[in-house]
Length: 406
Image (cartoon, rainbow, N blue to C red):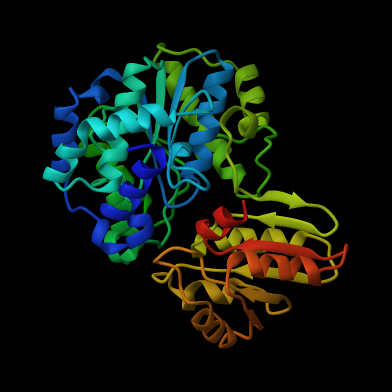
């Protein structure tokens, strides 16, 4: 099979949470260990930083990778989901894994995947570990897919574990309280491996402290320890928390003496995250006059911050292109959106996308008014046509809305 056939097979034949939802969620790490053993345990050959959290783990992972690249290291970066191409998930020094490597890996192990009912995510994690080990990266930044305790990435023993924050998201899998979700995320804390916590609440802090104590793991709360940050090309307001988390994580890495990261590396790395890693979709500006911003925030915690940032902008009329997935709690997120905006309702082009008419009906209950469009592209083009130079266009509600625009 060629690359297109390979990715089509992966997306269509195997469970993939990104597209399918609940049926793709595995309840244990049996398959992850089985595949790792079959591959010769490549994860054991890697030095890793493991990053979990509800929001900010992607930005944090990319910042860490950028800074370590500036320090001269060969850096593997595993993240999810992708926006344009599957290969975005697996990079070394900002360069995506080759189509050839993906094809060789899947073709070599396809019979094993099918025989053992491997999920999309499990085999992608296996691919990343295999690639990073064969390419002999100095360090790999490994982002958790969902949760932590039962995530397929959680077979690694990292140099440091990182948990950015906790908010209510994926509650059907992770629990419907902050404490329950914190417990799942805290599952990445390993015996005698330090852990950095980005943000915490009164509900989540005891969960982290208990897990760290049980594992004899030193715990660092970056919001308490780091006061100064540096400018970054990632300009969303929410990045201030992520930068503190990154700086504290690198301080822990420096203490271990295996890697050396200077203040100059940190400053340069934060300024060149997009250039070094190719990160997209985080308060990303797509146009000026009218100003156009897209952002992948998709839950209450993330959208609260983004909506506040929009209100800081100066504009005559606000246009919002909005699409969501069908498992989103609309009663929780729709009240966050401003009523004095023109809405363009659309459905992301995936099976999990919520019908745009249903979104419009639900939005009307919160006095959010607008028209329904057949696609994300159609809604975006109509917003562009309607907006004057002094207006502001925001595109979001789902990672998949941003992906289609980009």
